[in-house]
Structures are given as C-alpha cells and as structure tokens.
Amino acid sequence: MKIVILLVLVMSSLGRLTQRNDLFGKEQIVKAAITEWFTQKLDHNDPTSQEVFKQRVHIYNEYVKDDQPEAVILYICGEWTCDGIGKGLTFDAAQQLNAVVLVLEHRYYGQSQPFEDWSTPNLKYLNIHQALDDIAYFITSIKANGNYNIKPDTPWIHLGGSYPGALSAWFRYKYPHLTIGGLASSAVVRAVACYHEYDMQVYLSALESSTECADRIQQVNQKIEDELARDPDAIKAAFGASELQDIEFLSMIADIYAGMVQGRKRSKMCDRLAKGSTVEEWFLEVKDMARETVDQESYGSEFLRDITIDFSKSSRQWTYQTCIEVGYFQTANPNAEQSTRSQELVLDFFRQLCEYSYDIPIFPDEDRTNAYFGGLDINVDHLIFSNGSDDPWQHASITKWKQGKEYDVKYIKCKDCSHCIDLRASSPEDPPELTKARQEILATFQQWINEYQLQQQQKATIIE
Image 1 (tube, rainbow, N blue to C red):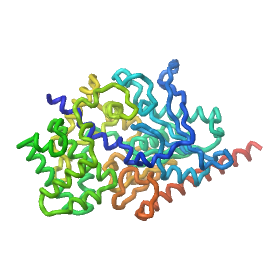
Image 2: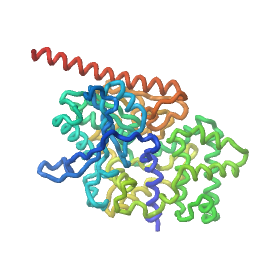
Image 3: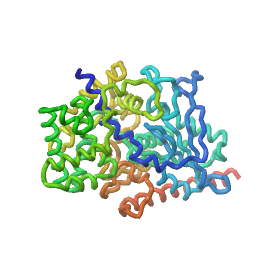
Image 4: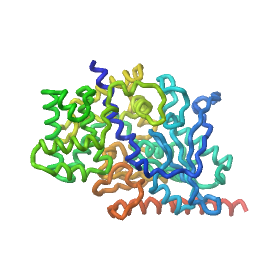
C-alpha cells in the first residue's frame, strides 16, 4: 500500500516544471508558417545504428526580409507537446536580427515519438545526451543542406527556458562550435535529488508579500492536516479529491501555493489570503485556488504506469528523466518554519516511486550528471543565464556571476518575477527590472552577431 500511494508525488513535485502555461498560455501560441518532420537518428551513440524517427519542427519566417535570413534562432522545446511557441523574446529577437525561428520538439514528447508505446525498454533512448545530440545533428543537417535559405555561415543563437534552458546551457558547453551563443532562462543546470530549496523559496516568496501571507499558508496547512487525521474522507471531498490517498492529497495541497508562486501569481495569492481574519476564511480561499490551479484527477496513484502514448501527456517520460539523471524531487524543507508543504513529503517516497513506476531499480546519480554537464561550475562563453527572484527553481540554476567564468548573468529581482519571466511577451505593466533585462539580452544577441560578422569579414580578407 505504501508504494502505491507514492506514485502521485511526482505529479505534484515535478509537474510544475512541465506545465507550459508557465511560459505561454495555449491561447497565445503562434501558428508556425511551416511545420515539417526532420529525420532524426535514434541512437547517436552507436555509429552503426541506422534507426531513425520523425522529429517535429516548426518554422517561423515572418521576420525574414527578401527570403534571406541573416541569423537563425533555435528555440529548444522540452518536456511538453510543442505545438509552437508564444509571443515574446524569441520573436523580438527574430525581428531585430532578421532571423528565421526554428522550433525543435524534444524526442519522446508531443508527436516526436520513436516507438509505439512508453514501455520502460522503449525509454532507453530518452536522456540528456541523446537530446543534445539531436540538436547538434539537426543544426549540422540544416547547415549542410541549406534548408529555409540558411547558408552554412549563417549565425545561430539558441534559447530555452526551464529544462530546455538547461539544455541550452549544456548544448553551448558540449557544442560551442555550432552556434554563436545561447540564452538559458531559468535553467535548471544543477541536478539535485532532494530539492527542498523549492519549498523554501515558495515560503520566502510569500514572505516577500507579507509575514501574514506566509503564516496563513502554514495555518491552513495545519488545519488541513488536522482534518485529514480526524476525518480524511470529509476533507478530501471538500477539495473534490475523494479518490486520492492521504499523501497524494497533501502533495496536491502543496502544489496550490507552488503553482501560484511559480506561475507569477504570488501577489494575487497573498492578496486573497489577506481577506478575512480567521483560519476558516483563509481555508475557503485555498479551496477556491485549488479548483483554479490543480487537476485533482492527475494526482491519482496509477497515473504514471500507463505506457499508452498520448500526444498531450508528458508525465511518464519526464518522470523517467528525473529518475535516471536529474532528480528535482520537491521534498519538504527540513526547516518546517520555512515550509509550505507537509513534512511527510520526503526523498524516500520518490526513491520508491522511481522503481515502482518503471519496474527497474533506478534513481538519479546527481554527482555523475553534474560532473558530466558542469552543474553550477559550467564555464562557457557567449551564454546568458537569466532568473527571476520569485522562481522556486532558481536554486538549481546560476544566479550569480563567479570570478573567472565566461557566462553572463541576469538576475531579475522584482515582484512576481518568476519562472522564465524574460521569455514572455512584454507588457506596459512590466517592472523596469524586467524590461531592462530583456533589453540587455537582445543587445547581447546583437553584439554576438556583430562580432561574428566582423570575424567573417576578416576571414574573407585573409583569403583574398
């Protein structure tokens, strides 16, 4: 029984990294001018392998003048169905640089499926190494074949946010010769199994609004745990979660606050908790937020074991990646005074979860992953790290420049500046810190282009 009820934890503790409405709502997705299928190698590690699969690519060329792009912007998709991208920094850069935008869907997600089901043996080619090699093979092929009027010497810039932000950083680390630079927005480059800092940041962000906001979250949590101990059926029914086991229910509760903070709604959350003067009134607000922010059904125990391919789902694939390489398991902060989730949410639950979900003994070796990809010690040139001060994922990213490092860092400190905030479309209501960060990123892109063009002119002069 204990193992069965663990399954849902990954939904709460990993799902917040995978929800693409964190980047742009589906209603904001811009339809690509062209959508094509790229023939991708299945196994880049085996030079004798001839196996391939079809990988989806979206092409945006509306900012290209005279059908001749002066640059390529590669948007790296990640752990979701990538039907396109939304308005924001990517298109701002394309307009500024006269660039074509290519959007590459990640293997095993959306319609880029190598196999007919997600059984554990079929997931063996789902890892960071293969994903980075996909990008490299894609760029090399486009350069060689001149697709979309892209010349071999046309400069490429790559970017991504969250896990794709990490891919952007790791790609620059492993393949610096294929692009002239990259943006790693909210890039979770630090593999970490017991990621209790996420919980801590949710608390600290609530505290930024007011001491009362953080205190009221904890008071409501205590009321819920007391009710769960006394009459579990009644409290779960109140949240429309009668089918959930107790631990599943507690993980769902934690995601109410986490989702609001990560989703740039910390101020709205705290404003709502400022209403009333009793724990019962604050409890009712949390109930309303639950209906708006979490999908209770998705926290069910057997959700992850379904091997049937569904283009709209990503939980089984993403959980597999966390279990073999990166972790990111959102455990409760050991300091209960700075926590917004139940102290029952600990690492052992996730350890059993990984084995039960895939029927094999797996758990991430974070030291090995960090050693291979650089972790927080990654050091490459022409790479920008950007993070928002409210983002619970910032503790797995790089937020400060270190002496001797080549990369650039943009730490955007402002109210509700959370996950991948710089990638979103600009607004007149944006805080000045965010506007400045976007301007600096675009200026850096232009600087890279200028430097590259100068280098090309110098090479041509030498040849002559």
